[in-house]
Length: 397
Image 1 (cartoon, rainbow, N blue to C red):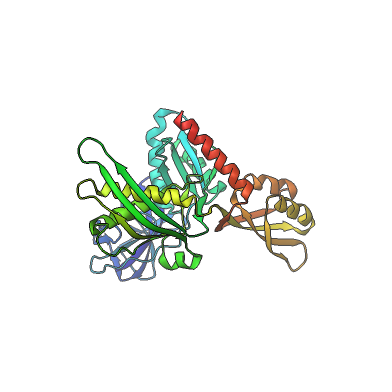
Image 2 (cartoon, helix red, strand yellow):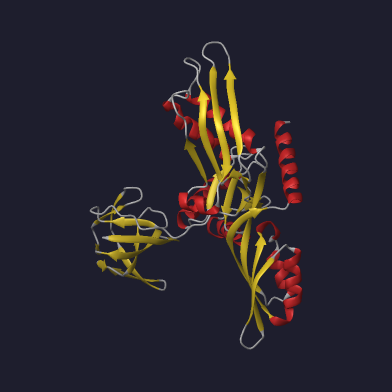
């Protein structure tokens, strides 16, 4: 048996899980295994859906789409009868491009707020929730302004939770443009055993092809010869690199496209420890990134706009003001409508739906999806760095 849970729905009777069977037979009363987390579940009830009508069935075979109650799983989990250990590939889930700080308007709504977020993240893999370690705010990340607005509206409608939202934040990233060497000593002497670690090597930028081939945004290479750094500290050096990649030196965003090569170092028989090498490596990379011509990257969106032909001039002008690059422009067969494909930085897309409606008398519509990250203009980078610096100073005060 092989089946995929592709959609979850909340009903008055609990969670309804829609499942497509790809192989084998699904019988009422049998046990199935969730391949992703290893849980064993008994099938108490299988239904076939006809719009909102449910038809009880006893079994379903390959190719059927059925729904079940009482299954605790996430969207895109694979199920088998326990004899197969195959997981079906999930749909492509892009990285979120926009974040929003949310909190319930009243403290007594906190329970429902947490329930809603848990359910929404289960049913939608593109929605992420995290708690900011510095500000302790709950941050909701998704694929755009509308995506996040829909979930905030659903919280209000389905869970009676009024939310207070902050300013939407664009998820910037950082990278470097040239190779830069590092030679960093971390030495701290206190009473008893201190901390001592030294690392040497270089950091260099990676190409898009290398990142895709590797399957992760950064790479750690160990080219040490000999035991100047004892081999048991190599994993700590890699952890130190990962620590440095979480918060970049320019605007405190994730770092990607950096290869760190460790070539040599030094240790102390008493004072060296896992923690010493981890701190040393993280500080070495943060410091060296400033010398490797760092850049801030911003998400660029593929925007498809459909408008009546008479509004072409004003819509094109508004896209140019938003730094949009028109990729293609197709007129439909009778010449009445126009489809534009444009690449626009996400930071310039706030409030665009309102502007497009007013420019086209409510007849224009657009869809938007993430394309890639590109370096921001120099003046924008300066502004972002200044803003980040002021935030850090305010926190310190």
